[in-house]
Image (tube, rainbow, N blue to C red; front, side, top):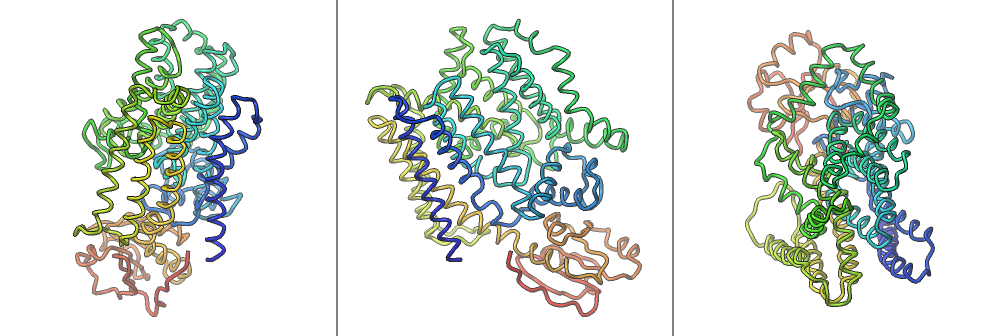
Length: 567
């Protein structure tokens, strides 16, 4: 444990040094005192630290993570790399790429939380570096640096680069396609068109139709609004379409050949079309659902969105097809597309992340490059500063209020988090006279905030929500004399992942049928304390363990008690 704290302190120190060093490097580059390799090296160091820190240090969450991780584990176990499965039943929620990436990680590092999340961290790292390289080429080193910092140091990036889900990888592929499209327009080099089509094909293979639709729609709107429609012909040629089909089509064709209309009905109709047109699994919300989410997920860099939008509108009025206009179209289209969708979820808006980062980076660079005291109408950063102060006040007051929470958090957690928000707000105050120091300070505080939340909130949430299920799963892995394990009225894929065995799920009214099919064989049932009271035939089972709001029961004889395992 002592070694863990020492290595963490060293890592944090290096990362803080990297942030400060990057600011100094970019400032000196104007005088030709620093090499390009040093700039890239410092950014890579910081990106790796943020993206990989603590990656395998907490349990898989049942909200999406565990089911992807288990499906990939089953892929490796069965050797079936064509059809993903969960509980050894075909799973058509997503295309194949995410499972291939996770399976490759398992092959390289073994099956673990780190391996399950590795592809997300790797994709996030590439996204930051690609964004830096793209903006640096188009606008220069200072906008690129602030864009990279804005992309790297926010809650949305940190959460989803540490989650075994598709979102940050989709963000990388859509962003790469749009970056390549923009470079193809402004450099007149066709190699970028190949890159744009290839990235869109991989996005389709990762997430489905949205992976092709979003970059295509943004590109077409950009050409229309920049009065450059004739360029469309450059992008729609047979050789590019063939490249796209070569990447995206083989798996879809092979899967349809093997599974037929079952695949089409479930994958295309249910998970591609109906998910957008009708509320799916109760995940819906009002049209403005994503507005507060953007402010939270992209804090504090969301403060630059109004200024970025204004500059994008000005570029449109002048007929300039610049980076602000691209970011504006990207931001607005994705926001309205998912706001209109019937199914809503906070992670759906993540493809906005690069557009916000680019707007933030370019606007922040303009602030820094102006003379002292001439920030102009940069009200957004001051509004965010005021909001930071209000959040800090609420956090300071929360321990003294009688608020019921699912997790046990000590008062010092709220005081420390409130202090970080307050300091961030104070840094925004000096933006008027010291913009470089202000923005650098905000980046440092945001980094410390993310590290603090990872060390406290995420760890606590993991233990509170997943520890009991981890214990049960690990326990079941050692039980060989009970052929049937089921969960009753709860959907907890993490049990199957940690048990490394099939865990069937039954609902109310299915218990009698299941017991008949079991034919008197021993059964283990996991359910919640709330559901246990309504479970029919409960008297036939012995309570083996209760913990964390869950209960494990069985009709098997002489089962050992469930110990507390150490993850």
